[in-house]
Amino acid sequence: MVSGSGEVAADDEEDSAIYAVVVNKEEQYSIWPIEKAMPRGWRPAGKQARKAECLRYIDEVWTDMRPLSLRRTMDAASRQNPSKKFDTNS
Image 1: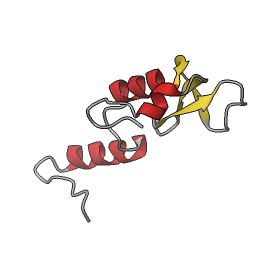
Image 2: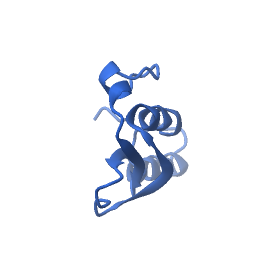
Image 3: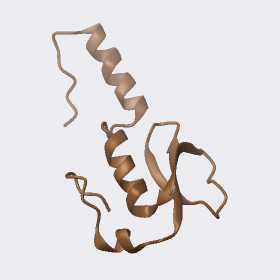
């Protein structure tokens, strides 16, 4: 796994299998072994490499963990009422 600081666990560094970085319609990222069929609902994100490199790539590009639908809802709410902040804790 990648920590918030971009560090990869030792066992991920040692994994020599090749993975594809995949992304779903909510713009959430994952990795998938290239020898397996892509799961339904996911598409290639354009990166294939060893596990550690794929995880570092995801750490760089996936900067907003909120699903796309939530980001859109929050953006719409802030445009409708710019003085009121969207409360994510309720």
